[in-house]
Length: 397
Image 1: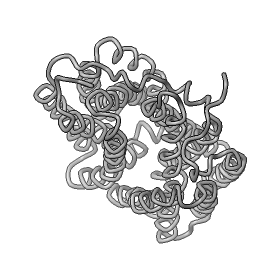
Image 2: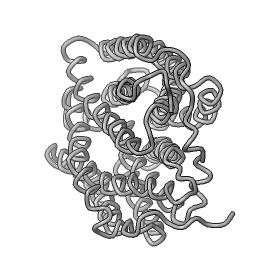
Image 3: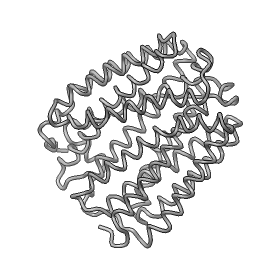
Image 4: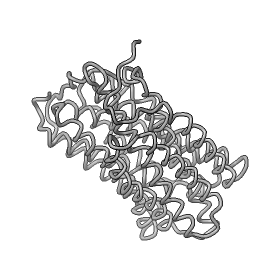
């Protein structure tokens, strides 16, 4: 465990970093799809732009891990926050399209570095006995950032302009960098009591099914982000603030349902909980496809947020059980695997939604995604751990 930083300071710095990263992610949802350069590029290009963030996260995660191993989490975390501030300013330009794509990819690079280093900082500064609680707090800040982003962006756009949300985010990222300099001093070593990585966790029976659930849950909510804002603006005349509130309804519903469902894991069969989430996801996507009135959109988005929480909340707990099945336990490896699966879902959802909207229209694309979620979700449920028996036994290589 680190001798140079107090656990409370490490958790605070990591939480602020994750909040800032996901706030920027949320700020982009109601703004980027409506920029003239993005509208002119079309749905497929919009989906590709949104997918640039998680794709970069996937690519940079192993690199960030190596940097953390060599230098400790302090430098990579600081690089991530400074990089996030710089790339966010690029969004404020608003055009051309290629610059926005570049900004989105660089945002993913900076965000991926922050995720790896932030969680590693918590692991290095906290003992194993309290690490799970600290990791859970960090994940809560992720949800808070996504929740605050869309409505805040809509409000700033209506009161000022489309550059305001991104300038605010850049300022927050720089403020976090200052906090890191003040609170995280000296060399911070990596943890030595949690050495296994995500590939080790995949060797535990049931881990692939947990990964599949995370991909479906993250992909479903991410799929509507690049294609729904323009549709709602054209069909229902929604403003940027309205769009922000629509997406906030989904995140708020998820934030309410998440702890409720998470509390049931261990007492109820996790396969049933995830099954309810998959069914709700299918219903919500079909509801969005068929919505003819604004209240139906709001309802479908709230159902989608609650449904994805029913999928992701058990998966968050189960991945901890999978890591605990290793000897020695690998909480960090489990969370790293969760983050990689979540990023994969964030990448696949927008790509499929954007291409599908271009090919067959938004409604048909959403119905197709609903069918895909039903097939993949149902196929993976049987292989999930129940969550009742605690960690699963380790499989031989």
